[in-house]
Length: 569
Image 1 (tube, rainbow, N blue to C red):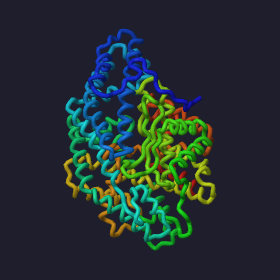
Image 2: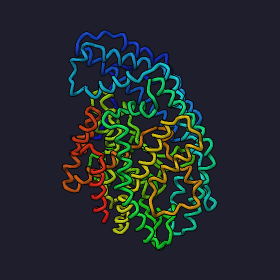
Image 3: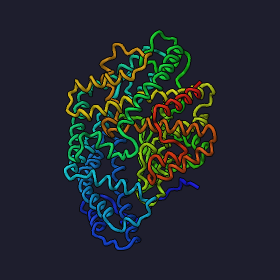
Image 4: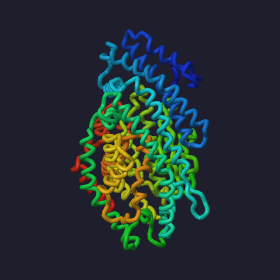
């Protein structure tokens, strides 16, 4: 039914060989759409398809500029190409986009479009019209460029261990060492290296907050948080729901986190558990090494996905064939990982910083889930239909992490290693919740109080950190490092307020896994059916299509946490 034999979208409006080089050659296509007469419903649907084709071209061009720059942050020409698009092209597109949006919603024939098919699409168009302000165009251009500076600064961070230079991602593997002195040394080196750029990142964040706040005020909002909720299309939950989530994490998740860390302390035979002990194994137990090279990671991931469902494996094979994978960590590469949908080509691009650890397998499977989502949504008729809510996008990725566990023999031939890997995964499912709540709650305060000082920001961060802190790990003497911990979270800099999605989606993924445990094939059918809808349904409807409840109330969180705990036991 589903195929990974993805084809680049055929062009019917634009010349086949057209590429974006400057505004002068791109503008006529926007003008033509704006001036074209639309007299019948067929005219309107043809006009929508032509506009979608132009959008796909523009989106993919922007994506490739970002991909190339994050793969090599030290290449100035790639940075300039990215900046050129966001400073010279994007600002000129925005007034046309707004005018085209208004042409659509004000056209009498729009009322004749199939409401079920176009409801969410038109809702997003109306939201864009409501938020658009000419005064925000230069601000948004500056923000697009400034946000990428986080990757440039972080991409240069390295530490020297045993006379060899490592990126921070590569250095993290030493935190799994059986030698506690080595772990502490590396932990401190990583934190000290982060502190070297503390002021640069503080200044960058100040500028981002100031510009984002101005953007919100220009659009008539009291603060950036309220503006951003609207911009992100959070039609189905409110800031109060987020506060409720924070409280539920304290009530129903932190007790499980304490159990996990108490068990870790006992297993390691330690009097006190320190932050550098979290990823360690007892003496005599080697750290999990599920692969050694990027090629091996691809090979094993393909095998794992294929066993789960051949279509999933085909998706990764296709991406590898197209060279749409850049997996290994290296100096000059931006931090983090992402799956970037490519609107015209169809097959997305996966970027990550693998260093041979268990968490790299999780990242690969996570981004692989996003990739499958991209493949499933690609056949939808309009580019706008593929703009699915981020909450369901993260259900796609996090469910893949959990469902694929049944096939992890591809990474671990040793049964004990396999058991440890699954335990690691389930511990991570639980321990990530407090961090999600911390990052989300911190951002609410940051943008409700945009003129705060560095000192106030640090105080608030420490206050929120303490609120969700476990009772087991001893953090004494590490206050300077802890106060700066927020700077490691790229979302704060690059995609503000995009973090609660992980919490909502993790709950959805656990629900998906419960289904999978009961009926494997039905669960994967529901998974594919929901993802193939793209953004053509509301968020609660997408959850429903996947056989899930859109519910992140304290009671629901309690039920799901009990299920994960039972699986761990």
